[in-house]
Amino acid sequence: MVSEHNYLHNRGEKMGMTYSKAGVDIDREATSIKCLVDIIKKSFEFRRGKPGEPKSEIGHFANFIEFDDKYLVLSSDGVGTKVLVAQLANKYDTIGIDMIAMNVNDIICVGAEPIALVDYLAMEKVDPEIMRELGIGLLEGAKQADIAIVGGETATLKDIIKGIDHKGFDLAGAALGFVEKNRLVLGDKIEPGDKIIGLASSGIHTNGLTLARKVIFEKYTINEKLPWKKTVAEELLTPTRIYVKPVLEMLKKDFNNIHGLAHITGGGFLNIKRLNKNVGYNIKKLLPIPKIFSEIQKLGDIDEKEMFRTFNMGIGFCVIAKKEEEIMKIAKKYNIEASVIGDVDSTKKILIEEYDVEL
Image (tube, rainbow, N blue to C red; front, side):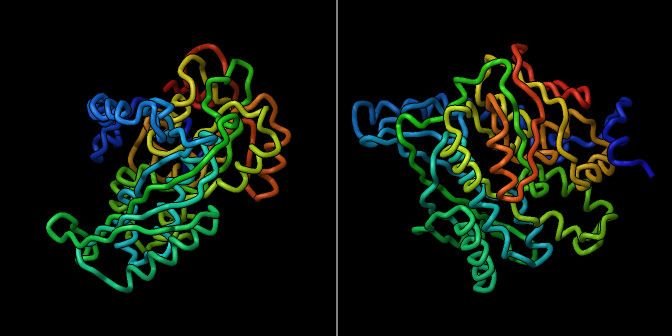
């Protein structure tokens, strides 16, 4: 049996599965998003010189608007095709955690504290038991993020939403945070020599599930055990880690040392480039890669570059700073495995040195 370490180092020519073949073309998405953004950013003019004037271009993890002596920070995101895994498993009490995580983990990337969220639940058919379980996850996610869920919207859209056994639904949300004007972290201070500290993910989180499902369900059923004894449902439905409390503590105790914050979501390690395109990021030594990623790669015959531009590969969040000591100390306090995984250089590239990958 090929070990996960050796398999990830197998650099033979492969024509295996890709995210695009599975149905998600991130390059095409980027081009399409630009078409949309080029139009909607003109709306900034509607608030120019008024309360709520946007203060950043669209494209960071979250945007912020001027409001008196603070900035209000906004983010919106959903759960994606992880909802299909929940339907297969008939288990819905963790999906709410994922939705909240995707929003609040983006909010903290500009140094802001999340405070509130509204949700949007579209269902194929109203199901009280599914809604009850979703509520359990939403409450737990709110607790972990220390936010209030202040409202939302539920819609029955049977002609649009289609799911397994008529249990189809989509769950998304929009979060609000705030930050003092002198406490923004935008990545503009990142410079060569800075350390990249990786904070461990809890697993696959909510990204790349279209590709993961494509390859995993060709071999396994939803309740079948993987080689490491977890069922497919248990592994794929592990909730996304919420980094709010540790990162806010890092910002409180070590603000002047922190130059950038990145949530590693869809697009994998390409997310780091959203902070500052004028520098390079050299990833030298990762945290241990969770077994689920090695299994996905093996089943789909997926090359390393595709893996790192699709999945978090065990790193759910990155802190870029001059020194790592305080950051590591706080991560340990919250029982999050952390390590200096690389440094910033002047190449303007993202290099995963350990696996000879350039993004």
